[in-house]
Length: 232
Image (cartoon, rainbow, N blue to C red):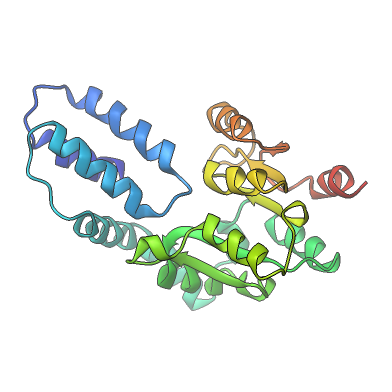
């Protein structure tokens, strides 16, 4: 995403260095991580227009990004589809054990992502995670105002399925942490240093704590200790 956006902004010939433009892009991409991808593209449009460029519709940029992304990950997708790769190789360490533990405790689980829904559901199936989410697997729609993580939470509360304090949310984006925190739920921020997933990324940690993360973890390897903290 970042190189694509930098290329678009450099083409505006604003006189800024590529390094400076990259800094601008990294800031708004990071700030909007967790929201639907279209919001990052809307921010790109705003930056193009600031520099006197003629921007396309945000959906055009999103389509270009998704095409680039699919090309980048096609080998991984093919490896998963062939069954020759362990799905857990592409998950945050300890994810499956965490989900098993939550399922054993009777949690009804929902998976929501800013990634487009068709891609999201296909990847969740390939990673063998869909089976855990009896509440559903949700992703972004072209009509982006019709779905968000906040809307999903509000629907569950409005339908009297849950009260706000019954929510337990996990995520590496500030959006889901903030949304669950705002309704009174408990939140676990995943501040992992991708792709190694071995230690806490301090920038992510700071960002997640500021929006209400109750716990911060670098991965789920220590899910036993996390469960002790969450459930006593």
